[in-house]
Length: 316
Image (cartoon, rainbow, N blue to C red; front, side, top):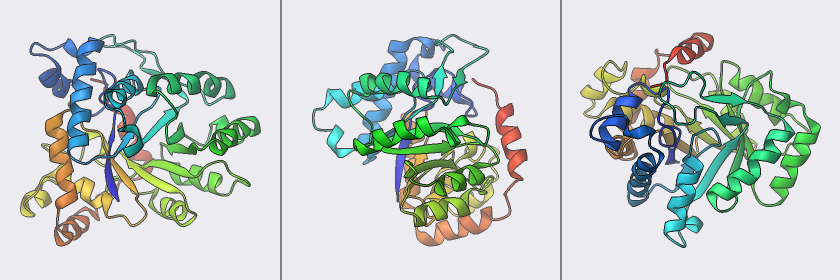
């Protein structure tokens, strides 16, 4: 079980993590607003990637819709020959970034899970990363997605898998477990890896993720801090973390890391300071994590309510 770095908050200037805009403004430029300058955002992203590498992080996650995240990650890998062989890179297709680095954009990404989008975005991913990712996921599958039943799409994905790419899906929304189980039951499924939201506020996918792990799939956890709701001031983990001598973000990540079916848990750190704070999760003693897990046991919300709240978060 390892911590990986997700780049959703590094490749685009606005995201729905709580405090994201302030975090970037405090790191990318001295006067605020520099985060909308792609060159400045790139320099910041590369610095965070360097810090993650130096701290032993070896799993990196991107997506076509994460602004320039794939390009930043590809640039970073190209700077040090040989580094690519030492890391695992995941990316996702099916969403397109449309905000164009504009402040206050009303639309940030559009969703389309068709063969046409896969055929367009796969070459874009190859060009940005400088080669194929290790994992390539359908981005945020929900029960209404045509990707669940599209045989032509599945054939395309089987071809990618035959070429050595581990094909999978990410899940979002209150029906994560339903979607995952449908694809676990798919005859001759091309899928063998899944990335899902799991945290003490939204643990509903846990049993299905355990089933995927038992079936030989790799399991990656995203949003372990609930887009910032479990980190920083006001976190429902704050009192427990202080009592246990740690921080709310580290405790949330450590609880996710100790799930027996989790191979990788992603930190979505926006800055190097956040990254180092998050990575403290790796060093928490088992008794501290067990006490933290007990403290989180009553925090679960109804899945529908959790996802309604997430949809209400502003992009900043």
